[in-house]
Amino acid sequence: MQLLLSKNLRRLSRLYTRTIARELPVFQSEYFIEILMFLASRTSPATQKELADYLQVDKSRMVIMVDELTRQEYVFTEINPRDRREHFVFLTEHGNLLVPIIRSAIDKVDTVLYKELNKELLDCFHAILVKMEQNLNQTSS
Image 1 (cartoon, rainbow, N blue to C red):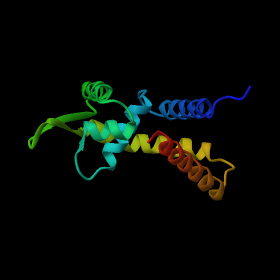
Image 2: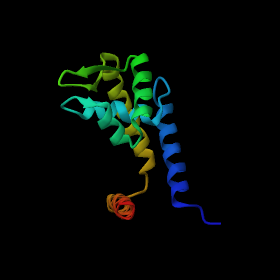
Image 3: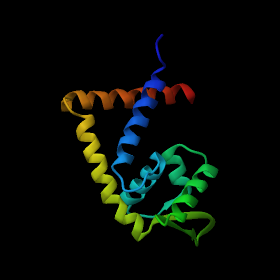
């Protein structure tokens, strides 16, 4: 029986995320890790809508995740003074302190993940993933 490609990718994604999470001082979900890294990479404030679009989750799910990260004191929100319906999300000092730890965990896991894979093979793999995503996006439009 041939497994769906999505099943294989999901399995790899879960294993990758669990391996990274084991390197962190406290367990963080894949989404929490991605939110913190996304916010750390920004030079301007990010909105909850931008985060939802980036993670491909609905806005109500994003609110739940941001609320949990706020409760854990990794992020805080501010209402956009120009559009009160919009909320900006910022890293707290506690969140900023976790970012280099997450980066280090990702680097450590990536070293293991990429073992015995040369740059050309990895570049090809990434190009194939991008092309597959483009193909599927074209069929859903």
